[in-house]
Length: 258
Image (cartoon, rainbow, N blue to C red; front, side, top):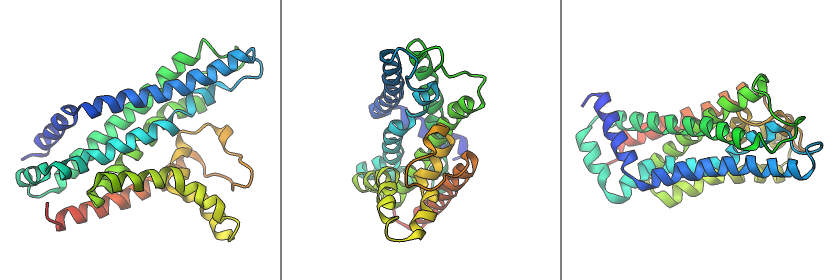
């Protein structure tokens, strides 16, 4: 089979699952809800001292990443749980095009969800924010948040896909991915009290580095936390983690039985 046909087959699989649609709705709802909540907080404060508009549209990714991570894992582990992976690999014996096609689709869906989610969040929070707090599309940081949210969620989907392909079990893969994205940074902050090495390496953790491309600059300064990487530097580090994980997944996919 040509790669185009493999991609088409994976496209049919992805959109034939109701979980895909629920994932999309949950991701958009999470991003919009954060924007609306911060907008309401601004309205309550009279708009003068309310949250900045960049915060209203730039924090939704932190909740959306959980749903995208689950989607990335299930894209591959779902086939292992049902046994469909045997048919897939029998149809594509070289195997790697299957992983590549899944990666293209997961990254595309993650990117689209990030950009659309920020756009809808912007529209939903705009009427609620005070005149001094509305995010301007002419602001370079606002534009980075728009595109960066898509890039970060695409990266989360790819990392989750790779871990799912490595572990091959939904529960274990989801637990590991969410641990890396949500718990590892907290654990690292606790370990900072034991060694300066943990302090120096904190900014290079997968989620800490990756979210720099989507996070508002106002989230840079946190008491006791070292200076974060620049947005594109952080995303480059995140991309390195993704590349290593996908490489391991590709090697194991070739060597292990379906």
